[in-house]
Length: 255
Image 1 (tube, rainbow, N blue to C red):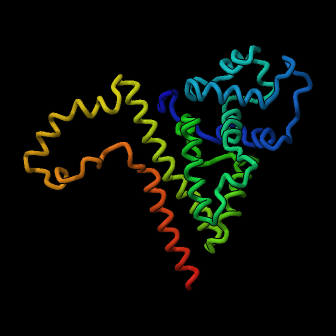
Image 2: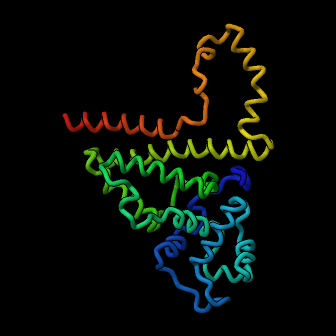
Image 3: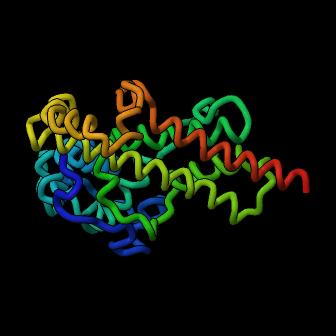
């Protein structure tokens, strides 16, 4: 799946009122289905499966109908179009589990650490999420359930309500950047046919010459494991963000 395939889609691009009806199950259900067992949930699941496999650009009403073995016009009994379908897909993949342990068994820091790793895992399962402009999301039950769950755990931080929401935005922004970098690395390996090790090995003679030139003394003095695969850059960065938040929480508590 290529991140740029099909361009960038935007949440909220469909009929907002109709999308909300579908998300909150307040809309009119089809009086009769074109195929026994076909439901809105199955339509959304099929769309997610296509996006996971072939990218968001591959998602169309015709393609989903083919996956489900039904006619394209039949899908319009369940969802008006791709814009509304995309918002249903977004809400579906964000559906939180009912296990409280998913956000750790400690305080707010453990909850945010678990949130960071869970969000990264979400982007790994569904890379097409990085193709979606979610600056204006349609808020369905899954999105609100997830936010409610996180806010309940971080409320003891003692920050103002806007600051608590900003904390969630901060974690998500960090994760999106890390997920995008990982996706680009995977795409580079696929498109070039070179593994990461082969790519850097091809540069080794030139880099060794540069390091012995005396022009880069700091770089030449770095330990051999500096750029090795064993260091978890994501976890390191996430912990430093949490360290900063801990300083803020302590400062607020002291004041």
